[in-house]
Image (cartoon, rainbow, N blue to C red; front, side, top):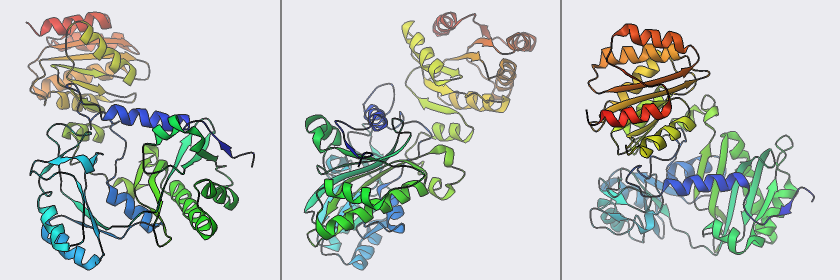
Amino acid sequence: MAALSRVSGLPSLYRNFSGIFRNSILRSKQISPVSVLPVRWLNLHEYQSKKIMQDNGLNVQRFIVSENAEESVKLSKELNAAEYVVKAQILAGGRGKGTFNSGLKGGVHLTRDPEKVGELTKQMFGYNLVTKQTTEEGVPVRKVMVAEAYDIDKETYLAILMDRDFNGPVIVGSPKGGMDIEEVAKETPEYIYKVPVDIVKGLSEKDARWLAGKLEFTGNLQEQAAQQIKKLYKLFLKVDATQVEINPFGLTPDGKVVCFDAKFNFDDNARFRQKGIFALEDNTETDPREVQAAEHDLNYIGMDGNIACLVNGAGLAMATMDIIKLHKGEPSNFLDLGGGVQEEGVLHAFKIVSQDPRVRVILVNIFAGIVDCAVVASGIVSAYEKLKLDVPIVVRLEGNNVDKAQHLLEESGLPLISAHDMDDAAIKAVVSLSD
């Protein structure tokens, strides 16, 4: 059992995930709560996660998904459950305590009557649900999941994630499920367990049963839980997940181990292998500019200021926004061109930022290593001419092929404002606001 250990907290990578997630739900005048999630992370609705698990042999509640009130009644009757749980489907948490602009309180409801399902969903479809993880305006509900409601005798926690400390997957479990796992790790760390998995040998029956025992499943239930853990690990590998979290991983009164809720994170580098999974992405809740940027391999996050930023590299982008703020300016976006940007990508970047009517200045800040400054310069000239830009453009270029780039800009005859370093660029951008 040397590979198995009790730990005092969660694996480091999981803590990183949690930190990013916490940051994403902070309300801010600068960034919308949903937008701060990295653009390329695939975010699935609950019903999509349940369908993936169901198709791979994991125990989930029977459920239907509807797109209008009449359909929800019809399908609920076909589901023929003793009790139904009605859950609005949006890509934000805190639904149970949310509020609809229809006046309905809560995005999760229980009822025994299919007709009542219709009454509830009628107040959900087409209305905005506001939760602690949405903007003040909320998110419109287009789909509702109606599932068979189960009583739960036991709630545990189960997750699988890639952990750098072990150079591979680790399964994390706790008998204290159905609650904030970080609080469990903080208050009662002795109830957090982990099983590092040899990615070549896979998860053994012995290790799966050991973890099921630590989750306080006994007898036949221990075997059932172990089989569910093994199936979840198999699914984790199959879909190229970086994290799967089940909370609660529970037990019903009739002795069935069930995955009651799930959150998946997927490896974007496996998109070419996981076309079916990534085709599930719902962009209706995403800023259209973010979607457009992702289509051209750009990383964009909209903000509330009036100085647009076109930068290469996330670190430089953050530093650029900071120095704009230092000089009393307000950035209107985070836009990372990436290392392999070509002229067309620069053109699309200008097109995206110029869609924002609040933008009064565009600041291009490039420190080129992999990026070719001349390519960026050609893109700037092309964008200026094709988009007929009428706002000041401050340009600071440094690094690979910068002399050629400067020559291209000078020969263009365009009224660009040249800056010799980052501080100079930020100052000139802010000053341009009053010109």
